[in-house]
Length: 431
Image (cartoon, rainbow, N blue to C red; front, side, top):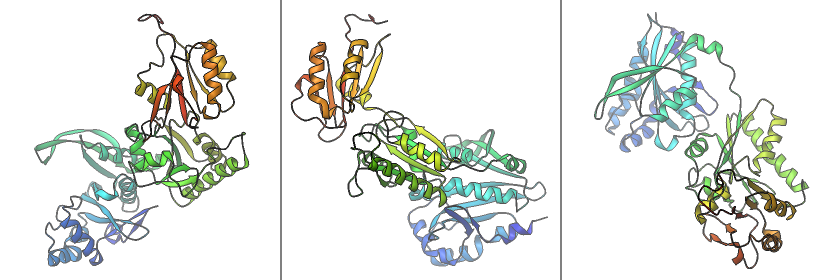
């Protein structure tokens, strides 16, 4: 027996998207999608931008399977402006077994933002709850990594591979079978909001990991630290090479003297923005930081403040390539061999730790030494290690400066790096 709730569905609202039946008001958006060659609509969707056929489909065609309880094809829309984001369908509905399949498609310009996951979660939980079904099945081509990730993020469990289960370009394709059954819902815990610190490397947009790019595109909100709201930051320039989502938050990046008033206010202001995003429905907020979020990063202080204000929030990090790694690669310098210890020393507090590290470690890397560059050169001379040292600034950016440290003449930028490699006299001598 067909559940009346299935027939009566008018709208499902999520945090950022909604699912609703198609109607005459969608004609313009659908016609535009047909002309663009869209491939994310149900099988019976018109393939030609004929006004009469589109009107019939919106008024009759798309609704007929729904009336008979055989399928339900819905528009995925933006909750803010009802703009069309894609489609989602529940089909092959078997009321004797209380099962169905689910499929979805998101328009290219809206992909990578978590809309598919939210729509899939919303529809499948409604089907297994209010609509009275017991099992929702999803199939994804084995080579479609994006669909596989959506299924897994929406809570579907992988059952196996159906060989040659679907015909398509090039012949039959193997499909991964996923499912969600009603008892699974009882095991679910509420999704916790998540703050993710993402390392975007020293500045070269190509030195960003595939995982970082994916997380940036999937996040609901992406924050980037800047010195002032009217100027682009280094992390922001990298982020914008991969996604248009980048909201500036001011950090006192150049303040000296410990926890200054400006620094504390900046941490509080950024935490306010994260918490407000969570309160407004964002499930994931990403914060981009140059280098790695766990190595001398502004993210550390933001994460600590957010944890204090929202103990329920999860905090994760995505590692990034550090300046010392990039400088080593660009200058052809080996950072460490065999049993050599490697020391990383920030010079914002002076050169004494740097001097001590040169005496006890093979390779020494110095960060942020612009204000003490002259003293650093003197220490290198005193230790007899000036000739091996290599200096780098603005790595991977316009105006990149890489040279032997002995050639430094004049001011050095705050964000600069120095590598003093260990002395090696024979192959494998440090093993």
